[in-house]
Image 1 (cartoon, rainbow, N blue to C red):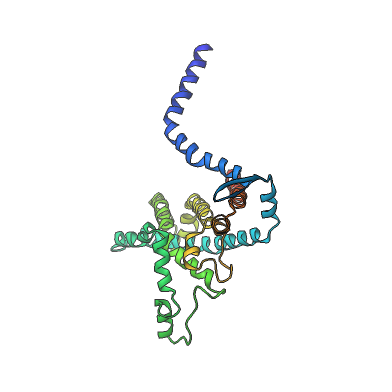
Image 2: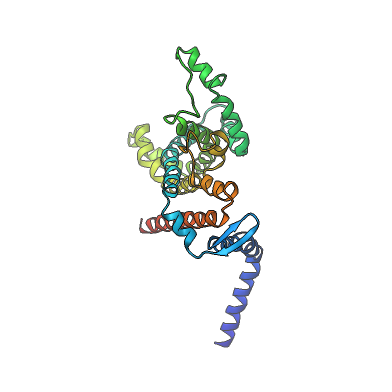
Length: 292
């Protein structure tokens, strides 16, 4: 029993030794940052440092403010409209590239290329395309007969779709690559057997391709929801949260509260609450996956 215990301890220590590089980085740059954020959130804190302990006052102020729920809804709204588009377009591109077409390596690189760009570069490109006076999109629409230009970034009816369009162009390559990997894992014998039974292309897609990509789709949806909730760069650089506060997201609200209003305690409280919201979502999704 003593030898077994010693062996188990040695095994655990060896495992910790291998995990140590990651654990050190995790503790210093993530765990400590979260703990520091919690500490700041219960204080009145400015750019100069701690002023006074306020307990739960920052949390109460945030939860009783309509701004928190309004900007949370803006983030959720973006997720609701962007995630299905990214999934559908990414799957469509993966299906096209997975087909035996000429030059598919070129198309694979071309579709994935925008994903390697930074958010600032992507936002700058689409700012030029969305320009109300000389933007390429309006030039094309006016040439096709439209009487007036579209205010892509100042019209409340189209501004979210403009941001979604830019985000899909930027991120769809990542979705495509994951789906392409999933498609290449499907045995060709499945399709050969379906062809012998007289199945159409649509039936092969519906009864073979989609079910085999179920696991990949769950991962894709999870990634895109988390990424969507953290939306910041596109709205910050393209609209500044406008028109009004139509496109002001939760992360923008945290940034403005901390760095523009000099209320780091309240900004930390918002961050902790937003983190808890995403944590609850993650737990619920994992629970649902285990039940399936």
